[in-house]
Image (cartoon, rainbow, N blue to C red):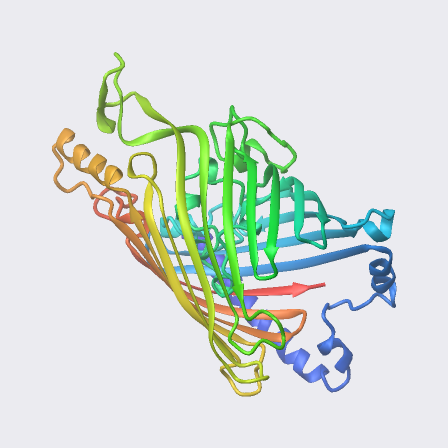
Length: 461
């Protein structure tokens, strides 16, 4: 309780500091309009950034910090503070080395916390309340080189890749903080070690073909186990600095078809993006209901000593992101998103997933860059995992043992642009059946529905 009290006090202090900075900033605007209109806090470094860019080199630095509190329900109540500093480097190799059509990119994180307990441990949920949450570390994330050919109709990217950079994404859903609206549980909870996604990327290769200006076909192969073949712990622990570059643990194949409409500035209709994709992984996946006893016989998991494994896994998904209203040439707009995916029940914790929501830009007069976003996500626990809970009831003669069914997350937040380089984002989440309806820490009942509140701020230097 003392640690939670300290976290709460720090959370309050952080909020007060943000208010103080904002108040001071507003007072300073009259004296330094340049500061409040530039894209980055530190500006052009006296022309240095422009010189670098002209030479083919761009550097970015961002700091994102947040305080999140589970104020009701969940596994326990308490506050967390976490921050992430991101360094990114981009290279135009045509300018640097006269290598036509070639670019390169690298990114690294420094992630830190007030304490070692993540927000998801407070809520007990499958969907992590924070999409920047990770273990305390300084780590390489991505590092790749890309070759574009035939007037960008074909591109090949190879190196340390993150699947969530290019697959399953929705621009509108991306404004939400809960991780379920990014790398969704239909992949995050089902792929080996969560797959090659934040904060652990893996070696891979991606090919993109554009047969038409509004059509793109992506295909990629990634190292299947982000932690490596012998990793029996979290991938972040097995690869603490992102430099393992493991090629073992099978292969994850992903493909996605992307169809875009009305993307040009002079388009007469409303813009939208539609995607359909899937994955195939050739590793070993434990059965969700059955295991093996000491003699190798198939038995319910409650009696098993070894897993019953399946070779390979697969799943499909679809994404729609559509603007449904736009104020002519103005900034105000309303955008809808919808994503859904499924995977086999016998080898996956999550058999079906769907989320959707709305993003409203410029809702408040005079605040054209602000975005209000609301989302709902539904994660269905596979029927085989639910049957395993029923088996546990019978084996243990415990009719009160909970049977997992689903987790539903509702989130609303308001992203306020204080300056082009600084935004502040208050956030509220409500999580129904955290973990899919599982036992609480004292095994006296199930984890209660959780309220999570907090605020995030992000600064581009």
